Amino acid sequence: MTESKYRKTSIIDVAKAANVSESTVDRVLNGRGGVSREKEARVLEFARKLKIDRALGAVSARWLRIAIVMHRPDAPYYVHVKEGFELAQKAFEEQRIICAVTFFDGFGPPEIAKTLLRATQKADALVVIAYEHPEIVAAVRQISRTIPVIALATDLPGTGRLAYVGADNRAAGRVAGELMGRFIGEAGGQILIITGLHELLGHAERESGFRSVLERQFPTCEVVETLESRERPEVTERLVRDAFRRNPAIGGVYNTSVGSEGIADGLRALHKARKTIFVGHEFNANSRGLLLDGILHAVIDENPFNEATRCVELILRHYHRNPSQSAYKPLPVAVMLRENLPPID
Image: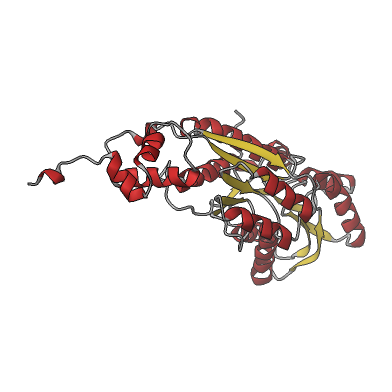
């Protein structure tokens, strides 16, 4: 046996493989800072590949700043997303990450694009919940050229994003369609869809999946209207009232977005709460109460903490700080009914 077969990997070997200086490798492995994110990622990647004799999991690397940019938390989902990243930051404390949440200045494309560019000036990664618009897509594409981007809850294809994290929205819509058709029964009836934003790919996919199942399996169910709440929970009650005035025979409501409590208030005011099949998304304290009251029949659940955790894992994997994580797969669709509610902590 030659001596080289027994020689341990050195800083010199890692420096050559990563095409950086020995001092850069030393700074990364000893947590001295002052190294760009790209060079740090390369050093950690080749240090692991070459199996340097060092506990890389304990390397005190520089802090990674993750910018999370989304709409203001007027609805429980966005509140829970924010809380999810706060918990994820604590869970990955040893990996030295900072989750910085920023809210859009406004709802229009120029405001969203401006907020994205400002929030990522000193960031190492971006997690974004936004709708598709040429101006927004262009801003995300520009950002993705320099840092990894994760599209959360609704995808942003064509932006160069690293990954999409969230449920398979088309599958979620199909599940909602199956539930609606079976709850209404063979006689069928008129269905109202309330969506958040047509521009949000996730909402469009949910509606598409919902409609496809009704058309294929429940032809006696007819979607009579799709109304847009613009993700403003306070408007959903008015939308329901107006829709029932136009179509008094509505027998089912499918909400692809936020504002289920407003829909419930509208159904109560119209004395339709016990006569209308109601299927929505996102399990929270409000939807739990509506399930227990028998007003909301089923909820397609998302888990913001799991989503936040997966976003952080993908970013750490990109920077070779968590290489054991496998490639991302969409989260499974979960259905909450009154009879399978988890106990309250």
